[in-house]
Length: 480
Image (cartoon, helix red, strand yellow):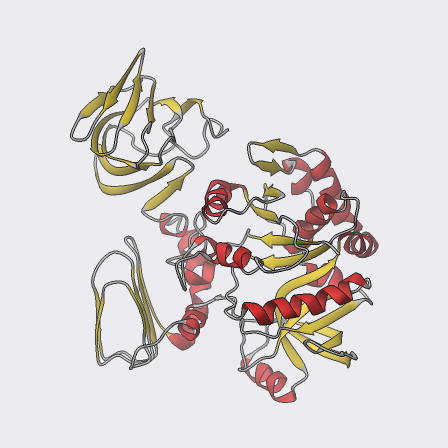
């Protein structure tokens, strides 16, 4: 029995703004320990028997962040599949099943969102083993969470007939799926004992899933089959064909298949679980002090209780707060009562309508070669701090509207400027005139750090003409 993990890493994490942004969502962040949620999801599988290399699906814009985080924990995936457009979980799992079904033995797919938090790995793996028994028999398995509170942020699944289980977690046939309820309805669900939270985790044989999808949502299977057939490898990634995948209907696996199939089974998750989908969830999961506060960063509190306070870049102080959330980043501050944090999604939607850049990126922007951070900006000048990883290099490029001054503060830079090439050491600098072809490279063994001062009439990131790039990026994509 071969189990192929399928990691769904394409979410946007809107409800954890301002920490989570479009180009750096929550699955790539260290929210509870030293590992990101994506890394913890994969490490949870280390002791799983019969596990094959994972298939990881993600947004095209996140590909280099994801690849770097896999490299950090020494995970070599079967494939990193790039989705050119968001189409929900049904198309993502159809793509994974099509790629896995090509194996001689029809594998069991274990579909896991990349942003869940589970401490009890032993209980989680026991649940997976139970799910695999049903999947091996041709069932489509989902994992339900026994609710301990009337949560309105989760979908629910009503238990059907209890299945005979000789050992391991309990299991039921699926009666029906229920949308996220109002509070009074959620209270009724919890009191009845007949409902579980919908975890969004699934197990099924690849061939069985495709058969069910061809019966219930044939248009999704046809579009995904075309997207895979017309796709191509790009460095360490597999790119789905954009035109074919964009034609694919958008639907969740819950609606597309699980609500319609007669072969659905729900297994009770025998461990703790949170999707960390809100600031309230992070408070619940966090380590609390004597006043039941969860605190991160440089924080000083006076008469504050039952609150979540996060500082990213400066001292945050508070007096007399109860049941509040305070989150600070370099470019935004969010404050809300804990019982109203679900409204952050509506707030982010409003910011997006106003085209606020704070919904897209942080001050620190990650690139395949490293990162940069805006330090100061005014009319006709911009100051950046740039970090280049060892043996990495920026694209060969030029600018039509700006000149650049580079000052090395740590490490060694190899600079290409026009027809010349030279080394810059710490405390040395150079000037890149407007319109000159140039490249910055780190030939050393430690990170290169430098200060870049841009000057000119137009200083936006899209003033880049990329002439060559070792990361396969095209002109107009992700400046630098």
